[in-house]
Image (cartoon, rainbow, N blue to C red; front, side):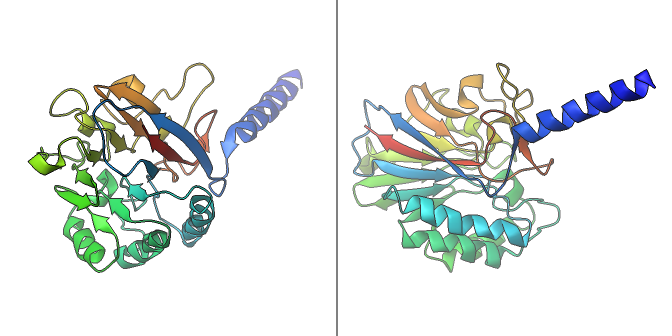
Length: 265
């Protein structure tokens, strides 16, 4: 009887601890960061960084409504989508057309620039380029595009093997911002960031413990690049992302579904 009571107490304690750290997928947090760059002089200085949407169920699409509400509060000059639009790459849970149409709603707030994530890469990779061309968004992977007095460079994802160097044109020197999925892509070539950079992929660990952080983070990038703002040559931000992968929940301090509101000085 004592063993049974102890078991029940331990089980109840475990349930309480789990529920205390569990983050509802509909509860999106905005995390504010300011990046200080000594070289960047472009005219885009207010950006929203959104990653790892992982659309898998019909309910996931309601997050776009919440994003639109929150974005309207900060007036970004550009929105950066840093990949992993689908939840399970092997199953292509939702059609690309439906996902792109949902994300295209964000262009009502500001121009949208995107790169692909590891879940988006596969036999269906080219299909994303086709669908993005039909939208108002800019898929900048593997190229550099001009947006007024700023250039946006898109690097492929290192985790899925699609990273390759993309040179910064002469007329974009000093005014370029770089996007990739896995933060390792921001330092893969030069060892440091060449421009202010933005990434996702890590989910900030998705499961995080007090004082320890995320014990399992799917990147070979240095620890300081796993979550939030950092500086390696130039400053950057790794967003914790919105969706979940492998496990259908996010748990622990700092693991909440989130997107980053970034000012660049």
